[in-house]
Image 1: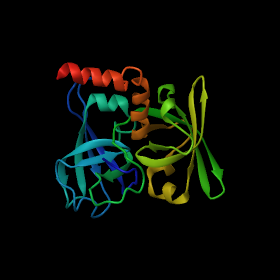
Image 2 (image 1 turned 135 degrees about the horizontal axis):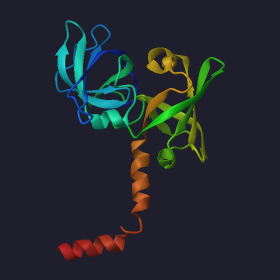
Image 3 (image 1 turned 180 degrees about the vertical axis):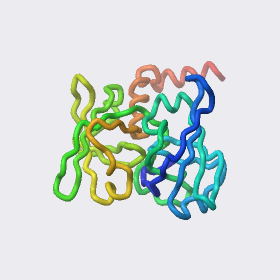
Image 4 (image 1 turned 180 degrees about the horizontal axis):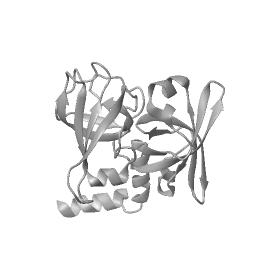
Length: 221
């Protein structure tokens, strides 16, 4: 579990194949800011650009760690198959502040940066989102973009997909990898967890009425 509040920027320094076929994943070696790994252990969860991974090896002295990314995860995400900068977030602890929103680290889809516009001191990020994610996105709702908890400022549905506009304040731009985004770049997206459950409840509302639930309980007893 995460919050979408980025705590460091890491650097994928090497990418090694775990096998010689498309069914195999890759092993990533990442370098971190000084002291970032002081309270991290092998087996801990770490979000990389919004994708939850497991720390497989660790070198506190070198401030590096490795993760193994499956072929399935590589196919469902972007930016984890090559060297480069990534947003890092350690798993949420019970006593931590929930500063962003509830983020699971499970990427739901890949969006496309349609354009970036300067808006005063901020930056307007425009994204084209896959149509199947549109029902989970709402004005002033939350969405994780490359692991960053952000607020949807505008949303509109088009034939080619769902268009989002998100305002990036200078702090967010400076302290995440979002400052590297350019038009045409792809980003990892995670929809809001609450929206996911509401959609499922609405889909099954006719099947699970109070009468049907009571009837099922009666038959089981």
